[in-house]
Length: 140
Image 1 (cartoon, rainbow, N blue to C red):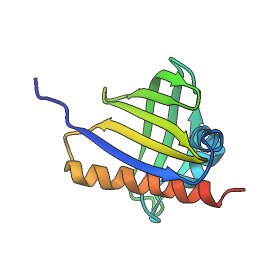
Image 2: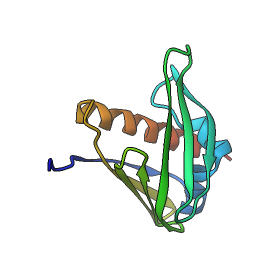
Image 3: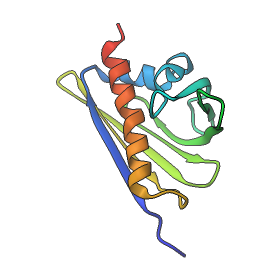
């Protein structure tokens, strides 16, 4: 069996972990930050944040040319510390949150998919995380 490539993206956000956690998990916030570039958007989000709960974020090109559901099932939910889930294709994602002196570190480690170059995947996930950082830091 081929060994799964793991990819890590990370950022430090100038906000307390409680705020970061809320905006990361609230569907009304997810639709505002969850895109890799301005030509894409996330028109809908459903999130049942609990072990065995599921989420589904609709990702679409704004011109309507392409779209997909990004979805999975949670297997770890540790308030303000960790969220882990398995996507519908079997790949796993683990996100760690930690606060130091009012700033929150977010680190996501995920299994790469086989269709696209790992660097391309990393840049896309990092772009989404960077959008999240900007969203949190500009939110009241």
